[in-house]
Amino acid sequence: MKPTETSSDPSPAPAPGEPGRREGVARQLSAVPRRARPRLVWLLAGCLAWVGCGDVDTPRAKLDELAAQSAGVGPYQRVCAGCHGPTGKGNESVRAPSIAGLPSWYVEEQIFRFREGKRGAHPEDLPGQQMRAIALSLTEDQITTAAGTVSAMESIPTEAPPENADLERGRHLYANHCMECHRYNGQGERVFHSAPLVSLNRGYLRRQLENYRAGLRGAQPGDIYGQKMVTIASRLGDEEIEDLVHYIGALAHGDDPRPAMER
Image (cartoon, rainbow, N blue to C red; front, top):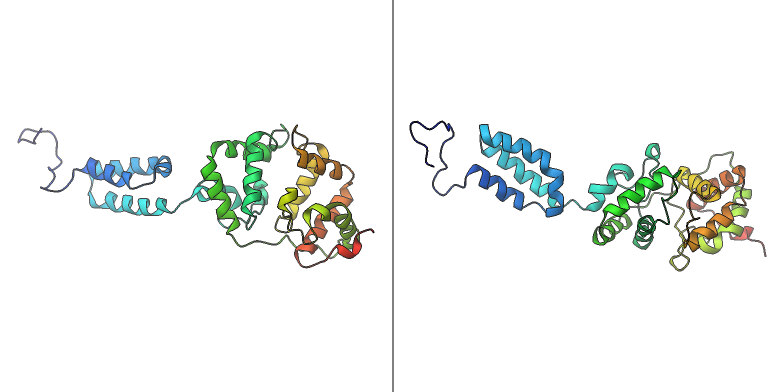
């Protein structure tokens, strides 16, 4: 209906060749990747309010900016960075480990373990349950893309050990219980499905060894690699776990465990 002198619609008619306000918003929304659109709903609601009562140029500029920003946002930034940080350094306050630089095969494998219930299924493993819920929300393509983002990040070495750490005992423990699978440099081994250790923070390493020992991780049926870790961790006391975690920090900064291996 065209505005008339008695029309109650105060807004001016679009100029010839200029799209209407709602059509302009729809056009801008179509430029946003489909998977990013739900994250923009609240912003678009505000923009639509501006369109209804204000200058049309301002919300269009905002939508242009949002569309440009969303176009380069991948699944890691949308889903993972909130806990693990934009650079993958982790956040111990929410028990999110440092993951920067982990190989993509390992990241993908662990996310699929969460999806399959081989990790994060124990009711006492609250951080694991959170990761399981997130893993179940991702598509396979998103998992692959997020893993590639993580592997491209600059690796962050495990914290160096404190001065009072018993590195001799930690070195012996590592050389004779861990080195066969995780290798002399702590970088892990794909053929053994063993994790790279020297870029994981000490708090996370300690917590996972305790989880293995308590059966919170690795005890699920079918998790043959986790069951091996349960067997090893069950032999460790609290002090041995602490010495081993501190030694991994030394390993990350150049120590060589091979001389401590029993022949």
